[in-house]
Image (cartoon, rainbow, N blue to C red; front, side):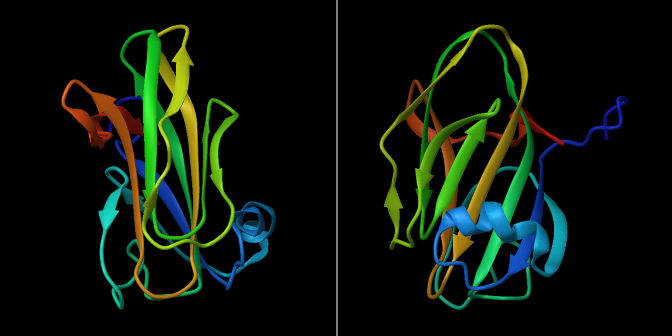
Length: 157
C-alpha cells in the first residue's frame, strides 16, 4: 500500500455470463452477477483448458474488467500488444487503442502505438471475455529485447 491510499497492481471485476463479443461486456457488465473483485499484479496469463479464469471459480462464460492506472516513466512513443484467447478491448487515457470483438483462439494483436506527452499515470481499462475452452490474456509492451508483459511496478489502482 502506498501513502496516497493506492495499491500496486490492477483491480479486476469478474462476471459470469455468456457474452458473444467484447462490446456486450462493456455494455452489460455492470448488470451481470459480480463473482469476484480482486487485484492482479499485472496482466500476464497464458493457461490451458479447464483452469478457472483470472482467480475466479468459473472456467467458461466469464468476463473480466481490469482497471487501474499505468505509469509512464517518460514521455514518448510506447508500443503494445495484446495476446488473448477470446474478445478484448484496451483503453488507455480514455482512448480505445485496440478491440477484438469476436471470440478467437490464441492470437496476438498487431503492435498498437500510444504517444505519451508527459510522464505520469494514465487510466487503463482492459475488458476481456472468455466463452469456452482454454483462455489467455497478456498485455505486453516493446522493450529493447522485444515485447514482454508490462511489469507490475507500472500499475496502480
